Length: 449
Image (cartoon, rainbow, N blue to C red; front, side, top):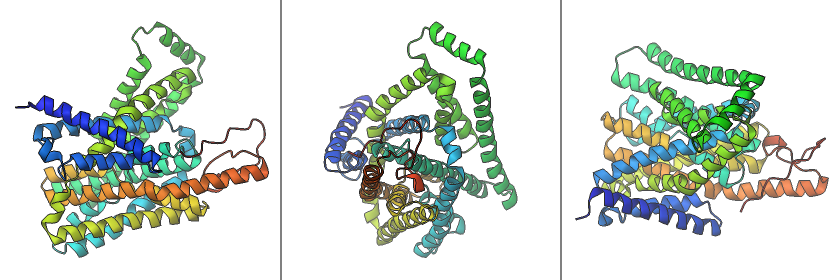
């Protein structure tokens, strides 16, 4: 009889090896690798081959859950390393409008849709259900932007910043709803505590950023960093310290009830080249890219697919109708809101449509919320599956729908460069196309594969 450790290693081997291989095949077919990786997870999960291969035992799935948490942490920390605080400030207000719109419109209308499907649900359950389908997945969005070579452009940074705002809105509302579920406090008290928690976290991060920025301008700090690099004997000390900082930030946000994802992302943002030094920052980012892209990203998407049990959707017509309706609403609402808001901000049609598809992706946050709701007895297993399956389908649709518009964006930039003989300075919104520049000319970003 195979023991639990052997089952876990077999499952991990099958998931990672197949995700890497199938992901590569999908890139040659003109699709994002994550689409193939998600489908691999479904193949080896409880929907298809998982039970026959012995991969769905409680012990193995709990070990996979821990790995998924670790993978999410690495992806968010890597995404944060690629975004500078200056870029976040420059896209602040438009991204805030985009993020709040992407959350509150689907959330409020989603509650109405859920109530029409399940008239017997309480108002609180309607809101919980709507909340889980209203979140744009920050780690998934970060991966897609990297695959499309847009992560360090103004376009990509605007979407990432909007996604951060989206998740902050979501965790704030989730915290307030949980207080309504578990306590008898007044509405004003519960909402005030939830908003205050978010403001406390952001205030702490802002304070640390200002402190690090002040230190970065001090000659003594630069000397300290240089001496630290030469005297610290542990191999890859910078990488290890970044992990410690990331875990501390994740623990802080988790303790405040904002989920560890938010803390991990902001920890990466705080580690700037000015703080760590250009060489060290480049070295750390290179290590993170290798580890995350080579292992954690294929594993993460395979596990998202693995968590979805489509068999439960066939238990009743109501579950199937709910699943189909919520998928259509989840894709349509996010696409329309994302495309409409970015278009009103002056982005081109191709940029707006690409943004609309990219923000439809879901990921780990709503699954983590759904797990909490299952543990509290708010969700049953079928309702959890509907949320997970809807997130899986929307995440598959997202890069497929966005790819032709991303290609059109880059083609337009290339044509404009040939016509004006000027390279583009920023890839985003109204500044996506080449602009007149002075001084050194930056290189044209890579075209998509």
